[in-house]
Each structure stands twice: as C-alpha cells, then as structure tokens.
Image (cartoon, rainbow, N blue to C red; front, side, top):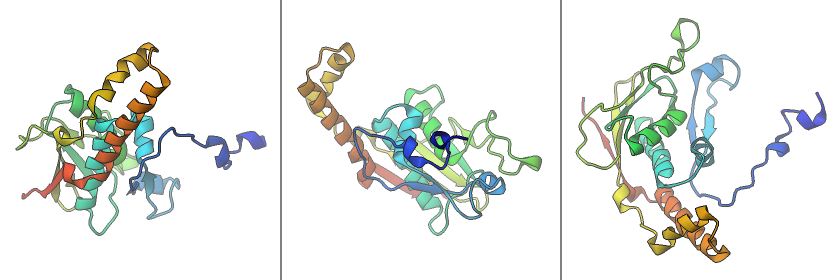
Length: 219
C-alpha cells in the first residue's frame, strides 16, 4: 500500500467547511462495532453535527433540529450512561411520507441506528439487531410541532422531545436571495448575506434549548 493511500493518514481526509458550528458531539456505543473490534469495549462512536450534514447533504433548521432532538432525547434517556445502539426505539408522531418527519427520522436513525424492517439484523443470533426499532404514526402528540419519543428497551423508560420549529428565527428578506443563488444571478453580497442569515438560524437551533421541550413519558 502506498503512503498516499495509507488509511492512517488522516490529513488526506481533512475537510474544509465554509461554516463552523458550535455544538457538542453525540457519543453513542455500538455493541456490534465493539464485537467486531471497530471500537474498543465501552468506547463510543462520536457523531458530530457535521456528520449529519454529510448524511443530509445540507445544513438547515430541519437537519439541526433532528440532531438536537436526538441529542436531547438521548441525554434525557441516559443521564448516567452512554446510549447504546440496538437498545433505542424511536417513535415518530408523524408519517414517513411527511416532508419533515421523513427527513428527520432518517437523520435520527443515522445517530441511533433504529430502523424499520429493512434495518441491520445483527450478528449471529440477532446480536445488535436494529430492525423494527423505528415506528411512524406511533402516538398522538399534544402539539403540531415535530415530536419524537425515545424508548430504552432495556429499562422500558421513554422520553419525548418536541421541536418548536415555529419559533426558529425567520431570517428576514435575505432568505429570498436563495432563488437568485440557484439561478446564478446573485451578487457576492447577496450570497454572503444569505449565508450569514441561513447559518445563524441553524446555529440558533443548535444552541437554544428553549426551542425544545423534553418530557418523561409515564408508562
């Protein structure tokens, strides 16, 4: 193997982001990764918001909202331990065909591993099975805002997270520059103003806990 293709050479994978976000990563254990020596026993995967941006292909209040829903839900569900994939069931209040719930569920699944029947079935004997851990239209929410529940299959505890997306800053008229950016007719000033406003909205979602309500669901 040549030096240029050495997988330990992390410099060749350096990312150059146009914007940097301030938000803590999510740490989550994966028993399959530990069993296959991808991770040391007890060591978590570290999932950053930038990882979710890669999965989504863009950064927006929906993607950042999904990240924070997962982060806050897992923090509440595991106050003293690290969350564990294959032990986390995700319940969405809306349908898979809904534009918001569909996108958010895909990103929350990326973090938690929870999937429908087409998910990873685990190692021999079903160890680490993640199938049927993601359910849509699972409950009737108290709010029209995006709402998810996270259930620990090992303790039977459940928490609910509601994202008050209607309270996210609207960004003002600068958001109207997007069409000109897509058309290629926007000036550099228009592009810079749009980017500043757009990413400020994303950062607000990543920073403002008041945009979310976390509650314990009584069984």
